[in-house]
Length: 262
Image (cartoon, rainbow, N blue to C red; front, side, top):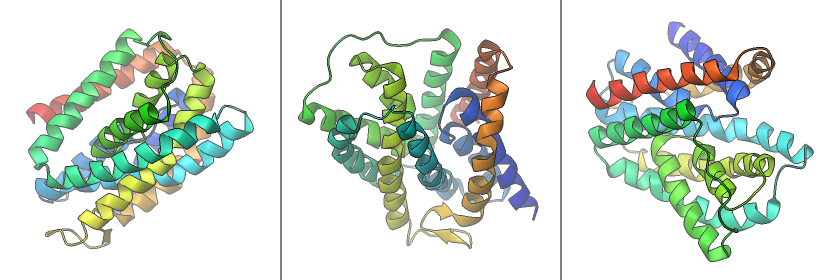
């Protein structure tokens, strides 16, 4: 019961932050699940993989409502989605394969570095200027493969990578966000499928797992996060975005330090 309460609270936290900043919940879910699973006494050899896989599973559900919302607002460029998706699918599945073969310490380093990069971007407001046009289909497939691979390996939906890329390619900010949110669905589906397949026969997994996906955490996070996105959006209209971003960046730096030096 206490574990379920933790997952519900985590889902509420992730949903609120998603509403506040428009970020995917993976940036919150992965580090907190790593801490939770370690306190459960699980081996580090599996709990980092479980945290990443479970995060991707939750993104599959939350991405559906996000796509509906952005499509209704006309913020999804479906021609980009169509050309981007093959690379994202390939890259995300490949990311799950690579993550399964990378030692836990290596994944922890990758996660820690990624959190420092995102925290730096949030602290200093680093945003790419429009510098070029969108590449042809081959270029988008290649970019999607890289974004899918890296995102699946750290358990995020990929918007923190795809939005800057699309902005650099002169895509309007609203359409870049809406298109990136739409791409999180194929990315998360391919990524979590890979983690399920590759973790099917992993040793030392606890009960109630599907591959590397821990189902109690998945259920609790999904139930709560879907309800608290609106809370975050309401808070975002009242609170200082600058100080909120600084607070979240501090959280990422703290968790990144734990992963790199803990």
